[in-house]
Length: 494
Image 1 (cartoon, rainbow, N blue to C red):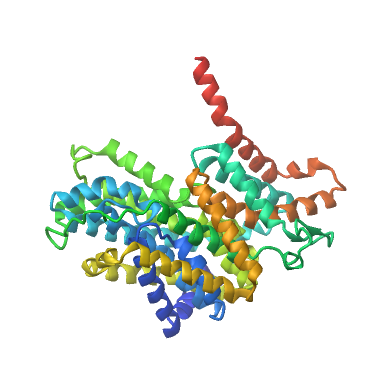
Image 2: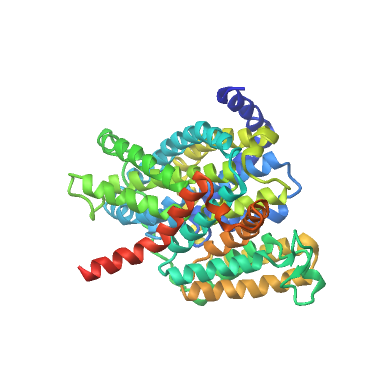
């Protein structure tokens, strides 16, 4: 079947009334958590994992996609109105968006953010529609050594790019790998790192770690730095729709932001922060208005487009290779594993209704979010009036109920408390969280690929770089690790 025919079948799945309902719920929930500072899509999806296991996989992932896209939309609202990004990818939007709001152009800033997100999300979803099947076909020819090289590239990229210190990044990564190997060795049948506890033979539940790091650790961090004085909200003033001149200044940044965000979102470790920073820098250099630093609409249009395009970009390696490139993608991979599914080339052939229903729902969700965000901004900002202590206490209670509901295990609750404390310490000392998740999920996969490749070659390590793909990817991984300090030393010597 052609890609177009498969997409039409996907729309048949996504347009079912029950799936439309879940898409709307995900979009509304995603917008809400994008507006509330400190709560991102990764935390929300992690909290939803225990309670969505009874849903059909198509319904659950359509809702998760709505949460992911909705958070990208909603994060711009707080960035513009109170100069507080609700989501990490909205940091650059705050630089110009809040100045526009203070100058009485808040409505124009919110409009260009919403429309830019819609344009970028739609174009990026079109790219996902036609690129993902081609990559999935190529992935059928990958060998275990190739997959091992790809996981090594993911490890190096995430540890080096995420966080200010490579040392902290690799420490976080190794913590995740250590948590991932707890339990029974799948090949040898021997217990590892169980310390004689029978309850750990099955391993540490991925959902428990996700909820602990994002909910418990984040809540402790927020509580330790709580301030009772909220940010000053700028009222929405000006025209309800932006002018023709605003459109002329916005359409090119939308397209450039999409072109930057989609490919970078697919790369390991880039997340949504790097594409938005690059987009803002590019628009600042190209601008001739002289308004940057005073409230330039290009500084809102470009980063918001890059933000949403990156959200679609992370789905390419996730669906085609089973490779998470961000914290949110790692949580989505955990969701697939909860349903006994492994993303990769076989997912497209074995579960076409799920894959194409998910892709089709992105088009529908984009339209829903445009309708939700343009007329209802005044309603959404009322969420900022919820007192922080009550909000975060409610999230903590919900997290504990979800973890207890997994297996009614006191061991899981104990692990939740310990990992939550570790998450708090990591936040305090600026250790990135995402490498822990990547190590936890990809560590066992990398081990399996490594041992399979070595077994096939009778232990010869040359087999790990014996194919063009594995040799190329390993070289890139080494360069990512070694090139920055080498360039720094050469610059210092010069």
